[in-house]
Amino acid sequence: MAEILDLLMFITVCAVLLSGFPVAFTLAGTALIFGMLGFAFGVFEPNTFFGAMPQRIFGVMTNEVLIAVPLFVFMGVMLERSKVAEELLENMGRLFGTLRGGLGISVSVVGMLLAASTGIVGATVVTMGLLSLPTMLRNGYDPKLACGSICAAGTLGQIIPPSIVLVLLGDVISNAYQQTQLSMGNFSPETVSVGDLFAGALLPGLMLVGLYISYQFVKALIDPESSPALPYDERRRDMSQGQILARVLHALLPPVILIIAVLGSILAGIASPTEAAGVGAVGALMLAGLRLDEKRGLAIYLSGACLIALLVLTGYADLRVTRQVIPTQDLVLIGLAVLLTLGLAYGVVVSLLRVLRNGVLRDVMRGTTQVSAMVFVILIGAALFSLVFRGLGGEEMVHEFLTGMPGGVWGAIATVMVVMFIMGFFLDFIEITFVVVPIVAPVLFIFGVDPVWLGVLIAVNLQTSFLTPPFGFALFYLRGVAPPEIQTMEIYRGVIPFVMIQIVALFILASFPGLATWFPSVVFG
Image 1 (spheres, helix red, strand yellow):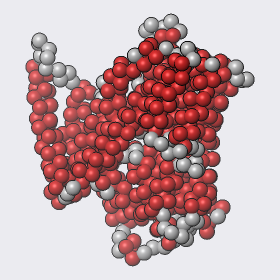
Image 2: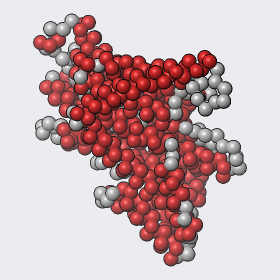
Image 3: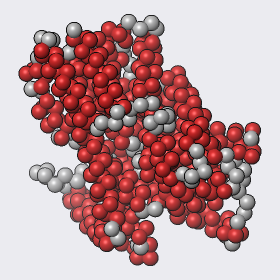
Image 4: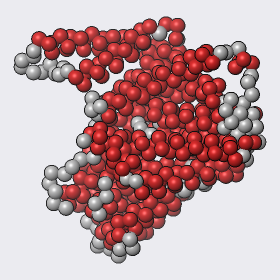
């Protein structure tokens, strides 16, 4: 009876989610209903499993890793409001647009840069849809290719770190991996961090960008009319190549420096992902303040230099002031750190006043609060769903199903990937991450699957959920800003080649696990 209730609970959740009911309430409500049904049939003990819920909620609220979620959201929304994407698109278009297929390539490059700096799919797709799509259509681009390029480039933020998907997935994978090792008798379990997933996803993410650009290049060779080169306009005639390059560098350097500060501090071991997210939030705030008034940017430039100097100093010096004996050299360095902190604080205050006066801060804080609240409420609902599913014996049922698949470990992995891909047509990545991954990951870990490789494989798979109709969010975002002459079916047909590219990337990653495991082993040992 318990197995039947488990299956019915999973089907009910999917059906209610498709009806449009809020995710968190769907997960929690369905879990409560089926928990009571299980108690009525004598196959579920509510005191044991529901009693663990307060500890789960407390664990979620005190999880330091998850603090990175609102910080990365703040960083992304602030950068989107500071017009970084607009400047990048305009100048990359000047740089690549005179090549055949150049506009599509520039969209992919800008999508990669925005992915590494903002990581927000909706903002990226909407911005590029408003700025690039009219230009591409006006210059004779195939509407399907233009729409597909923009949607695909916008979803890169889900795989290229720092990504909110990787933060959430890293926490789930880490918990599942530790529980699996404990259940197997290893009471000194190895850990998997979000930083491991960031490092593991870097090469696959860049590989995906390379595949997108290669497709744009080959498409331009085979069908030149689909992606023609842009003619020189008056603005380009008035600018030398050096001036164009200077504009590109002006647009490119600030986000690249921010990316290096955030990712570099994680990969160098200077900061944890949560601490790096704080660096990113402060850096995005200063960049927004600089963009609002570049003529008076000296204070912000100095504070940015102080931030970078602090990161370097904390990596090479012991700045703890609670020690009983502090050497003279360390006292000097601590004093230097205090001065650098004051310089950083001055630039932050200047930036904060600028974004506050211009009304940017209120919009950013509202957007950050909404996204963060949504994520954490869904996480709590998913925790309740997971408890009831386990209480009804769902883990044993999934374990028997996957271990009974032909092909052993590869059969189990293929089944999980296919199920996630199909669910991506109808469900959001958050539901799949919080509901499906905790159920299937422990079974795969028992097979000996590498957790970093599995996490990156799942992340690439989940990325397709933003492009697959009928509920791909990137499709909805672009439909909302696309010109009226663009038909919805053109957007759907345009993303099909890019979904196929993502599937190819998934097969490449499955065939060569070193793409995900080599870099973390080099960086973290």
